[in-house]
Amino acid sequence: MSTSHRLVSPTEVSPVTSSARTAPRARRVGTDRWRDPRLWLGLLLVCGSVAVGAKLLAAADETVAVWQLTASARAGTPISADGLRTTRVHFDDAAAVSAYWPTSQPLPENARLLRDVSQGELLSSAAVTGSDVFSLRQMPLAVSSSGFPTSLSVGDHVDVWAVPQEEGAEDPSRVLADATVTALGDGSSVGSGGDREVVVSLPSDTAVAEALGSLNGATVVLIVIGV
Image (cartoon, rainbow, N blue to C red; front, top):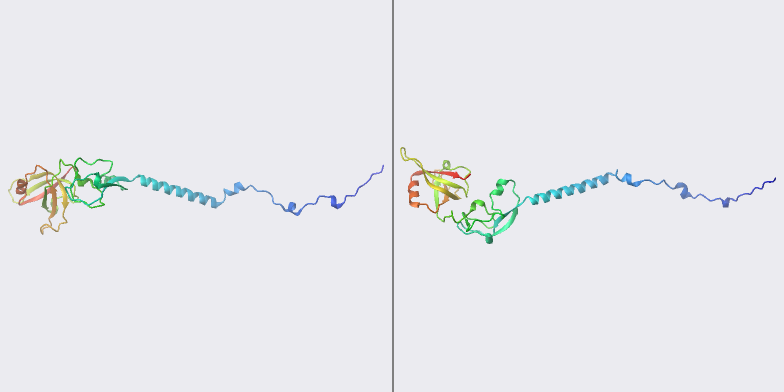
């Protein structure tokens, strides 16, 4: 039996291209991206921005709405919402908040100012009172540095006592009860012995002549009440 052999021409063999021989193997890109430090740095920056924004929003929520004067006014002037505007203030502690009048708390009926106030000033709680305890009569007192506490401030309520200076004189007596401090001098305008001027608003039922007689020649002592 004869076997025939056929020669295959080189042109009939499929050529292998150079690109097929050199093509790189496919890689999985997704896993390697999580190892890129730039990605983690970007995530940290985003998280930091979110945290800072949240902190700023929280700080804004901690502000308190209080009244602010739209114009200057003298002691005794009636005060109402017409002469006030709302402003929001951030206070460091609760004690600071209580020193000012919040807009959430209504002003007393026929409210008046106990002291002079300036335009733009926050309305102090101690600067406002109702008509039932207000008096336009004010009395200046010369008080030595030992006759009142160093913490005395405008708006405080005090009992005014007269202490006789002479030996064998009568016992100390209370001259004024629940008087409101409306002004404090700096200590330079009264006498030369270090006395300080303290102005108090007199209760409406005060017998002025009797009070002045009791204070004449006596040492004045102020006792702060209601604290």
